[in-house]
Structure formats: C-alpha cells, structure tokens
Image 1 (tube, rainbow, N blue to C red):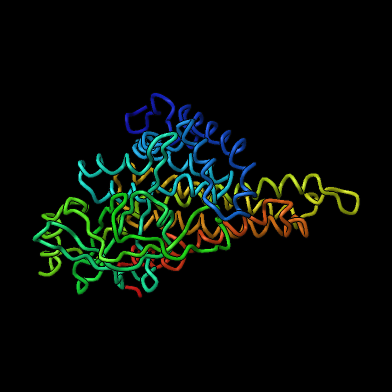
Image 2: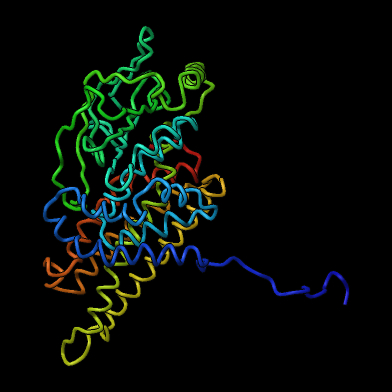
Length: 416
C-alpha cells in the first residue's frame, strides 16, 4: 500500500459536544441553587415586582453573586462557563436571574472599554460582598435612542479647569438603574460623529445629580428592577472616562479626519460581548417550559390515554426540543468564538441571540397550548415564563436589529 493510500495510524478524533467535568460541576451547582432557592421564590417576587434582595444574599453567601465567580467564568478559555451558568440560573427564573447577573453588563462595559486600572478600581465596587452587597447598572438606551444608538442625546462635556466630565441627559430601560451603586453611562462627546463620537463613563457611588426616574411596571421579568436614570449636570472626575482621554481624543481625531472606523461604539462593544450569554438565558427559559410541557403531556389523560400519544402534541414537543438544542449550539459556538478571539464574520453572536430569543417565545407559547387552560393560569409557571420570554426579542437588540446586523455582515451592503 502506497503512502498516498495508507490508512490513518490511529482513530481520528472529532470535536466533542460533551461538557467536561468542570462545566458539569458548574452546571449541577447552579442548577441546585436554581431549583432549591430561585424557583420557590419566583412567583412571590414576580407578584411583588420588587428587587429580590434576600435571594441575592443567598447567592452571595455561596459565592454565586461575586466578582470572582463572574470573572472566572468570563475568562474560561472554552467560553462555555457563562452560557452554562446562565442557562441553569434562568431555568429557575428570569426575573430573579436578571437580578443576580444584572451587574455583569456594567462590568462587561468596564472590561471592554476601560484600562486595567479602571477595571481594578470599579469592578469590585459593582458586587460588594455578603452582608454588604453592591449593584451596578449599564445605562445606554434613551427615550428617543434605543436601536438607533446614533440618536443619543445624553451629552458629556469636558471641564478642563477641574478635570471633570459633566454628564446631562436621561437614560431608560436601565437594569438596576437608580438602585445601583455604580452606573456606567454612555454619552455623546461629539454628537456630529454619531456613534463614533460616543464614550462611556463611570458614575461613582453617591455622585450628586444622578437620580432614579420612572420605575417601569413590566409584562415580564418583574423581579428585575428596570428604571430611568436622570443625569442633571453630573460631574465625574476625568479618570472616570473609560479608556482615558488620550485614547478618546485620538479616536475622535481619526473619526473627524475620515480615517476612523465606519461603525462601532462603546455600547455595541458591550453588547457584542454579552449576546451569547443573553441567548443562553433564553435557552434556559425555553428548556424550563419544554420540561413542564413534556411532563404534563405524559401524565395528562384525555379520551383514555396520555395526550403525548396524540401526534399533534408529540410533534410539537419534538419541534420544541429540536429548537432548544439548535439554539444552545448557536450560543455555544458564539461563546467559543469570542473566547478564542475569532471574528464574527457572519455576526454569529447576533445569530445566537436572535434564534435563542425567538425560540424562547415560541416554546413557551407552545407549552401554554399543551397545558390548555392550565397553562393560562398562575397555578403553573409557564404563564410567567411566557411573559418573561418576550423580552428576549426586544432588549440588547431587537430581533429586527439582529437580522440587520447579520444581513450587513453576510452581504457587505449598507442595509437600512
């Protein structure tokens, strides 16, 4: 046999889709907390529409709510730590889950745009420690600037005499907004440059001029605190500009000369890092609803047999499970690519969030249908999960925006 036709010397090894022992341990640990602590409290805090401080204290007591834990998962070289954790936690409840992970969006903003010194100074203040918990909020959206980030009206003016930045404007849809100790705020430094003229700033605890505006009463995720943040000539030290003034001045100069990037800004840099994690949250909600629907279909009898034996029900469950697994694989791929430093050539991060969010809506709706009238009552959690799922086609980029991002990436065309 010639070398050209020789058989391989050993078996070929393809990629593995099985979690390793560390990830299985993480999954089981978070799942236990979600099952024993989060789920039993979920209905109460959904009804109260209040921040679940006691649950956060329990999460902090076991190390689930801590800077060390989130940092460890964020720097997992496989990229799977965050999605595995998110799926299990949000399998428990989305509103409480967002209360536990809400500070990480601000932490991601500091990590993506700040210097190592800024990360070291501000990240610990976003979590605190058991008995002295802290929160953080990322403030980007505005009443007239949600998907259209370039329309941002919040302004940042540099006062050279005092080396301070003066922030004025109103932010909306801010998770932990006004309740947080540390706020990370995006603002326009040069409005004429639109997204290229924006920067991010840390507003330290107790800063005068920052206040909570309207607290929103929401359709779902009601245990998560969402509110407006009003900035009335808020003054922050120069060191609170993420990345530093020298870097900002250089970036603005490139943009004004036409040599800067055509797109890209502080808000989008944050969202790109977090979209696979958000997709994993949606997968957790969808999986929870599917499991309840499957169990119900196996035990509920009509016409003398379990309803799962009806082809319409069985096929619906098959589609639900297939969609969930497909969404999870897209999330894991995007998370792995991000961890490996690979470019999202086809907007794979947006793909994962798009598919996972729409899967959560479709699966929770189908679960309600399988449960019939029971699914429409609060005696079963699928009613709450259906309300929670809808936000995943809206926040951190609507489904329409995700499609726009994907379409631009694959076509290279300036699609509007």
